[in-house]
Image (cartoon, rainbow, N blue to C red; front, side, top):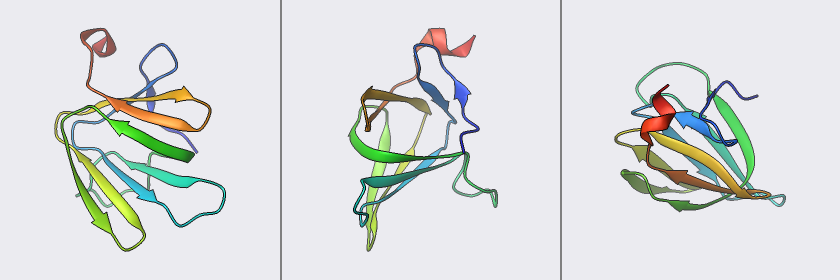
Length: 97
């Protein structure tokens, strides 16, 4: 399932207040679940198996019993830098159009 908007170069655009819920208690890698907004009562926009190795975008991270939650302030780009390794980068001007 992936309903994220493409952001060019194989990346995905993340909404301004997107939340990434990372479940780390899996044998086959972490489960990254992307929600467009933590306050909205909507199903996730995407899910990926792998590891969130870095968050460069403006965000807060909160530990949970099963992993952690990354709450973006200004949105970002989700990019796979290597197979199964995901990075959240700040939004680039070229992502808007």
